[in-house]
Length: 75
Image 1 (cartoon, rainbow, N blue to C red):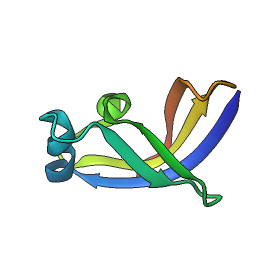
Image 2: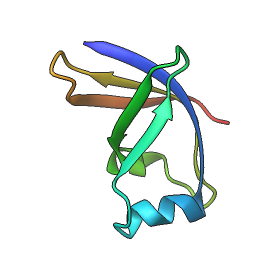
Image 3: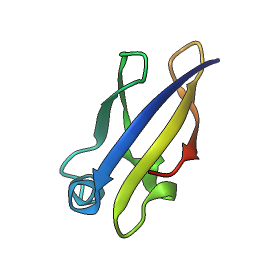
């Protein structure tokens, strides 16, 4: 298993594009500079009226398939 941390500040207006199906992947840079792409749907548990923000840890397996996402801190 591999774990990667990243910060995210995605306003609700921007997330709405993902929710409406206009976009389905989110792209971010990890704290160590890696580029990450993952389905926007995995952020839904962390969505509030303000959007999605905080410090997150993404875990994926050796085939680079999603395992889990945790918010480590709120922004």
